[in-house]
Image (cartoon, rainbow, N blue to C red; front, side, top):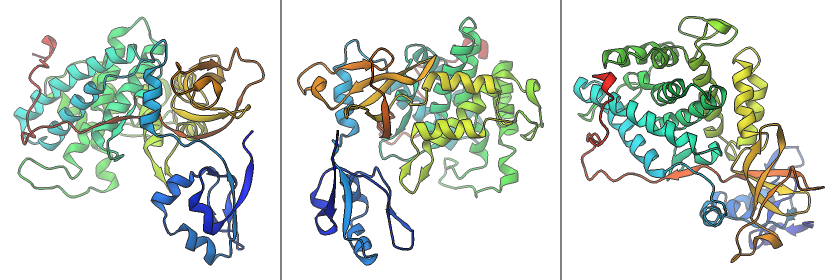
Length: 407
């Protein structure tokens, strides 16, 4: 077990570990949240010591903990036997670049039409990658500088939507491909509304909420104009903001009247937004996103599709850093569909994870008397480095040809 000790405020930055309990002021204002790593505190809030002193705080409860970075986690992950399947980072880089080209030159019809066709082929490529990646949230991408972009958002929604569709309809590969493509293109209508460059350095103004509500219709129109005829793609893009109770837009569809593909993209879009949302302590953890999805699912989403996603990510999604009941720490690799609270965990601390040894992966379902005591953070999201374009920002990747059905 990790012991908790009280550290004088003046010595706090000399220690390693995490805040063991919420630190509040005499007037009940939260100053430091429990679970915050001191290493992170030093970097992000160098004035924290003065803040504590000003509120009369003299000692802080600290629990010893091993702090590890994403890079360290990746190094451990590479030594796991058998290997853990992850998305090919190049696929995400190419897709992100292609989406940026299309969004930034959306008013150039020639670039737009060619770009949409290329994105459809890339969507099919992502679909094939999804089939190889059961630990789906370990493959969600984020910018190298941790900035959320509409391009990576589209890729993440595409991965999640394709994953859900593949689980629900394993015998319908064509439908899964269509849903994956729709996830990639679901927000393309926003490219006419949000401030992206038009290729000549000009920016459009930020629209109001009513205008944003037209983006799904605009997206469908753009795809039709580019020659897209796949009804599953078009309906999912048009209807991904419809709600199960009829309160959505643009058509106010209710329940089963909402196309299945649109229902899947809606759940994937909502979950990805939750994971990527920043709060006062940084990005929301996947387990918090699961809780939020459960809390808001009633009336808004198809419960069957929500259950399909939750069965994939579990209550402790892949990438979540957890502490076990015996004091060891690890990263969740995969959840069991019928046992959401006992996933497989890659050990990062403890005797079984010596630096030079093959990392141990334990299955909590078959490990007696060991359970997850608390969740710390997410380390699963794949960092996507910027793709060098050497000044040719409007270049389309010519090796991706349009599908024959697209003309």
